[in-house]
Amino acid sequence: MQPSGFSAFGLGPILENNVAALGIAEPTPVQLQAIPLLMQGHDLIASAPTGTGKTAAFLLPSLFRLAQPSAKRGVGPRILVLTPTRELAQQVANASKDFSQRLARVKTVCVTGGESYFAQNKALTTPHEILVATPGRLMDQMNSGRVDFSRLEVLVLDEADRMLDMGFADDVMAIAAALPVDRQTVCFTATMSHTVLRLSSQLQRDAQRLEVKAEVARTDAIDQQVIYVDNIGHKRRLLSHWLSGEASGQAVVFTATKRDADELAQALDAEGHAAVALHGDLEQRQRTRMLNRLRRGEARVLVATDVAARGIDVAGITHVFNFDLPRFAEDYVHRIGRTGRAGATGVAVSFVNRDEIGLLRRIERFVGKPVRVATVVGMEAKFDPRERSPRPGPRSFDGRRPQGRPGERREGGFGERREGGGFGERRSYGDRGGFRGHSAQGEARPASSAPRRDGDRPQGQGFGDRTQGHGYGERKPYGERSVNERSFGDRQYGDRREGGNQGGNREGGNRDGERRGFSGGFGDRRPAGDRGGRPGGFDRPRRKD
Image 1: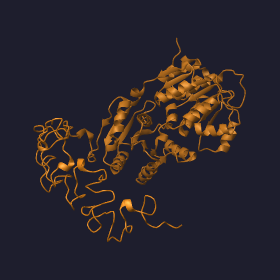
Image 2: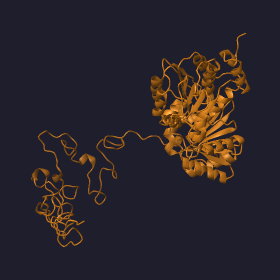
Image 3: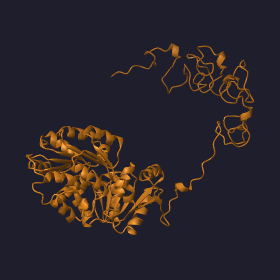
Image 4: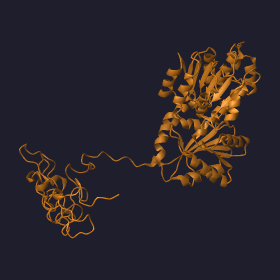
């Protein structure tokens, strides 16, 4: 009779008994494929979603290696596991301690930010075989010379895609450069992105590739819903409605910012929902205390940012609420993965406003199916993208709808504007002179025909011939202007005439080369050609410092 379950891997009686004592009977798909490859010593890059048992997939082969006789003596670790967040590092360290029970001389040390350096320094100076760390704090300890990697055999990158998203690429490369070259490198990621593959090519040798498509099977246990909302007040009312009714178990609420997490947790706690906040600004002992309150049942609602999307494993979580949708679609999967774990079912509710429709569509493409839209009777949103009116038909080149004959505009549009209704009397489109090279009826002019210019327009019908006091002064046709008459009308640079908004002296207009009778400006401003004083400027007195 062939062995079944974990005994088929040949892990040995101690590890098999430890797995059975934890209530794990059958290996998951990622464990079935990854454990044999890792026990053979291959480098591996594996794509596996959270909650599929990947922690055991890399820990059990590593512990099997440690159980074998070895001549390597020293203080530093033989197995190094890097994780992106403190919570995930602590979760992996706890799992390592559980799996390694009754294994001789196997100690696990966890090094993360937010913890006391004194305690970590003491732990690193004692013999240990497994080191679980976040990249930032491990770099600090390495730079201080407190970590000895001389006997390291295995490097594991857990949630490699998340580490790269958080900007740890340089730290990971620096840590890998300090490790022995003849090591085994294992990379687990939720998404097989180009950046992860590039990192793998730099750190691994002839790596085996493994992709476990368990997203659909895993999320089938989660009832995913979308509720459209109008504003943040509408979101809060809906959340309170759910927490007071259907969400009878524990819940995790995800927000976009730390400030929103604090404010929402305080508001929910004031309503009697026993809520706590979890985000990156909290010290590690505070974050651990919040999670322990949730695990003990003292808190019913955890309001968190994405720092908690990976690493929270609380069996009592029945509902996940996306108060704000995540920026990245893969983070949605990690968020809702906090419920429906270990064969249980769960509910994931996402509140979506008008500005988040694009994010919702990306999430639906990522999970491979649309998310069901739900409503709460009496709290429906005015906004619903499913009720959008049909898109209007195509426009013609001039921006009009295709109604009527080309060149014909109805009264009241851009066609015929009557006197006093806009820019003067505008003739209909068919009667206009058209563009350059076209006749008044829109037909092509002969090549010898001169195009219409601004100066040819009749008085009062646009920017054509503007009379004195009615614009910029009298404007000559462009072709009749002299070189010195480059400004509007027939003004020269040094001779601004009377009349119009800018013509003449100050008594007849707004501006003049020589402003007379104006005491509120810069004094006596002469024409530009006659100005003295500072080069290229006004003749105002110099400032004395």
